[in-house]
Image (cartoon, rainbow, N blue to C red; front, side):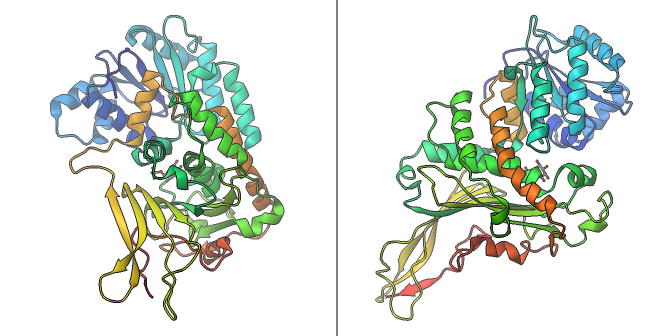
Length: 487
Ligand code: BG6
């Protein structure tokens, strides 16, 4: 990461919200402490809640974990607050005045960390006030997910943005792609030769992508119950991005367009799930007690767990299932990719009464463990030829190495104008094409979602998505049961 060479201002709409306080401001603080922010960079928080400048700085300070008083003080000197109604023209006049007085170099990043219904009104007001025009400096806009709540609304949003901003000015953020472990997927695949020859339908049996959470709505019931649900909230964006990175062809370079060209090809190759496949390829469920949570609509069918079986219909992946699942209030917080390889053509080591040699797995921990593991069969020492699964483990980081938060990298990329980790509109559109038919099918189904107990691994029905007795969800990174087989 290079030092920011240009002066700019980060203007955060929705600055008093959870995302800004928990992620954006701490990430900017980290960039400041690492010396990546030019000396005259200013950070403006915008929101409805009135704050005097000092009390705003005190509020931000509460969310920063630091023991370095001087560093903290120099960071707080960078930040200001502007209160107002984000739909009111007067607010944008005040913003214009602040920019005139505070911004060196005329470069500004507008970060929309607000509820999605404000994306368009804020953009319109910024455009009307002339604040999106790039006269002497650049203007960039960061848009949080969800980009629309279905394909049509994504198109409408894109149209509204496009009439006021050039595509180069738009940064559609997916924080998952900024995670070190997710960026590592590219390195694993394209900086090594050992995987590539095996990375196709001839050697891979199936792929599982899991994002399991123990937390529930976390105070976001209004958003989640209306705009979210596990499929829209996690699969449409984060998990399909992971799938795209796993399944894409090698890009010609890491330049933004090359990378995004390859991702979009994968997303476009995913076979849409029609109504007839829904029952066997998609599972939705709600954790017990969801209906009683404050802010959840009575009788809500919003799913807090979803699992999909998808196929990428291209030369490399034809007929290899990709299983995606995510859920809230599950047994563990764990995100991982599990790639199961095919079995050898002959079970040479399978003796009578002994279990079969187990297939190889490549396991990639995304969080909390950032690890890469390969499970292989090996001989158990002794006279008899018995085999067991052993795991070759590699922790990705070295002791003492600091792991950057996803937002740190992404916020810095915006400053540097690097859009490679941000989503292009055609990627978003292709992802909605995958998710829309599922959501429509479920909306037409009057039966309530299945229920699963809090603290479980989700509904039992999710196990049936494999449709094959020898496939099941990988719940952990550790070797399943250390099975042994005897010749
Ligand atoms: C967000 C979703 O995008 O990602 C949340 O809206 C989810 O519902 C979160 O909890 C998970 O991301 P992470 O990085 O906190 O595991």
